Length: 346
Image 1: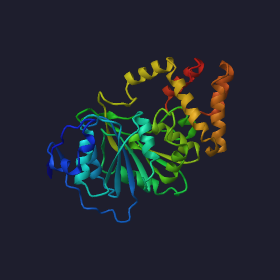
Image 2: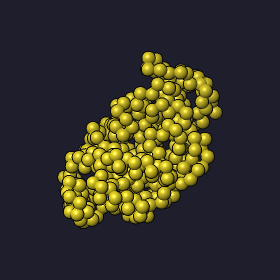
Image 3: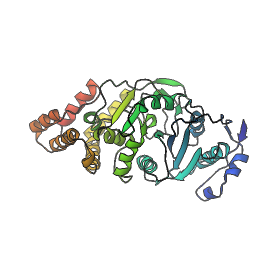
Image 4: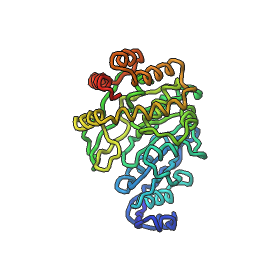
């Protein structure tokens, strides 16, 4: 292993730092990259978005290097970090084989826009695509488990893999596991709930083409929820793996955290009463209407019933929502859904 030191980087000098500068510096340790052994294995493009990620980024990059599936490349999009995030990326690029890591600048419009910009970016070409946050740690079999299922789906069918996560604290100590969802993934569920964190998602080219057709300039709440809606709505397949495939770090800097504890649930209830859930649905419905021609007839009807019901008086609203077939994954979630419908907050 070679010791690398990462110099301080700010907005003024970020473009002047070269790969050789990073490779000669000390401060982080980049492991020796294992010999390439991918042969004819499918290529995975890892879509990594970063923003002020210096504290945990190296550990996440190291976990890519230990993947049992060896044919991958990283496309990193940094959203204007003023810490050492860019320096760390440059250091790994210098030490990894050519082509393993490509570094770009994001739109600086939030994490969802950054991920969508990478998803739609011309030049990113692979067989499959994996979203990645900057602060997790992937299990060594994360990609191989995803591809084990994805390769069973015909290439013409949009397919999306997601999984549970193992929750860890800031120091990577295990503190729990994400909820287990047992109901079938479907558009009627995706309309009002996202079951898969983007940090677990891997999808095929057919799914990516739908997302690219929709475009990167979409006012959606999160990129992962949007992917779940698009793939299920357009007749694709979604597989939710009950086995955790990564260590999902919970810390004070999380832009999006887990909803598995009571504090998070009460926070969501508060957001419901403040009308946040209704606003989210406004945004998602508006975005979905731009892909209406791609929705299956059944899902087009579900969307229409859901959209119409939201503007009706109480009794017709409840009837139409029931007929739409929308559902959440848990009993408590469905009770909350009914409450939202009664209060007109849906």
